[in-house]
Image 1 (spheres, rainbow, N blue to C red):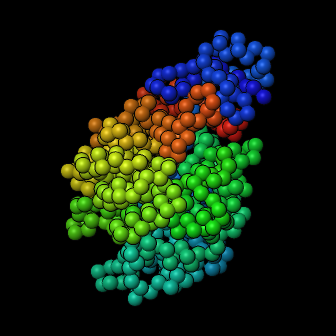
Image 2 (cartoon, rainbow, N blue to C red):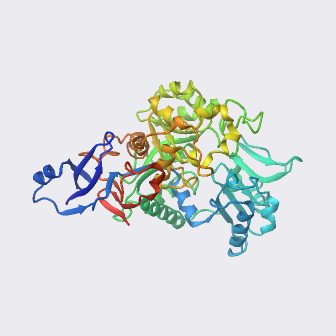
Image 3 (cartoon, one colour):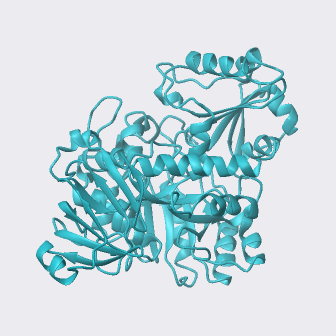
Length: 528
C-alpha cells in the first residue's frame, strides 16, 4: 500500500537545509522523495493513502543512542525522586510510599540527586531506618552509579561492618569507619542481588510503558542496555521481543549486551544484529569507570573538591583488555562506558592494540577529555555516544568537581566533531529526561537549568549538528547509515513530525514545539 506524505516542510537531513516537498512510502520503506509534481506524476493512480502534513514539519525519525529502556519504564512505574529539591522532601515521599506497601515489601525509589538540593548532603541509613526497619529500602541515585540502603536491605544483602570494598566499588563509611548506607558502583551489587526476582509480566509492562512514552516524545528507536539486570539474558531479551513489534508497538530497540551475559548470548547462537527489525542485539557493553556525581569517574588528576581521589577503575586495565579481546574473539564490537579522561585514555589504548571488529566500537559519554585524546580516539574504529542534557543539568556544580582549568575539555561535543570523531546523541534515561528537544537545546545553548549561564560556549553545536546526533549519528553508530537517519529513497519510513520548524525557532523556544506524529516502519505509532 503506497502512502503519500506532503503539505508541510520535510527535512531530509542529508545536508543542512535540504528539503523535499513529498515522500512516498510503501511496506515500511521510502519509495521516493522529491518535488510534489514529480512524485505525483510518477505515482499517479498508485497512491492508496494521503497524509497531508497541514504545514507541520517532518524529520527522519529521532533515535536515542543511549538509554535504559526498562529503567525508564521503572521510573514511570516506581517512586520518582528526580524532581525533589531537598533530603526532607525525599524522606517525606519515601515515608508516604512506605505506608502504602504490604509489610516486608521492598521500597524502591529512583533518581535522587543531591546536587539539586539546597543542602547537598547524602541521606544516612539511620534516617531511612527511622522511616522503616520492616521494609528494605533502596534508593537509586540519578546516575545509577550509587544507591542508598537502610539497615534491613543491608541485612538481607549480607553487608556488615566487616564487609570490604569490591574492585570497582566503595562502601562509604563515616569518620569512625562505620557504614553509612551509601554504596558506589560495584558495591551496589549485593544490595541489588538481594532484591526479589523480576516477573516476566513486570518486565514486559516496563518495556511497554517506556516505549509508549518514548514514541510520545517523537523517538522511533533507542539503543538500550538492560540485559544483565533483570533476571538474566533470556528473560530480559524475551521481554523486549514480547513487547515490541506488533502493529501498534513498532519501535527500533537496539540492545547492548553486557559482558557478563556475553556467554549466554553465544550459547543461544546469537551475535551482533541478531533479532528482527524491531528488536536486535548490539555491541558488548563494558564499564570502565563510574560517574562524576559520586566522584568515581576516572580522571588523570585529582578531583578539585577531593584531593587525592582520581576516581575509580571498574576493571584494572589488563582485565578490561581481556574483556575486549574476548569480544574480538567472536568478532564483536564493544561499547565502553568511559566518563573520565583517564578512562577514555585507557580504553583508547586497548582499542588501538586489538584488531578492529567488522562493526564500529562505541565510547559512551567521554565527558572529560585531554587535548591529545582527540587524535587518539580518532585512530580507533569508534563513535562517541554523547548526552547533551548532562551539560544543562550538571553545571554549575560539576565545576566544584573538576575546577575551571578543565572546563575547555569538559562535555566537549564540538571538539569531538571538529576532530572528525562521529557522535550520536542520547539521553541516558532514566538519568535524564527522554525529550530529545531538551538534548538538542542543551547541545546548542549549553545553558544550565540551574542558573541559566552558558558553560563552555566554544563547545556549542549548530542546530543541524544537534539534530544530526539523533538522526544520522544514531544510524551511523549501528551501521545503519545506508537505511536510516535520512529521508531518502530506499530508507526506512521512520519519521518524527513536529508542529513547528526546529530550525526556525530560537533555541530558547525549542520546547514550544510539540510532536504531532511518530511514524515507525510506515505506521503511525503516536498521534497527538
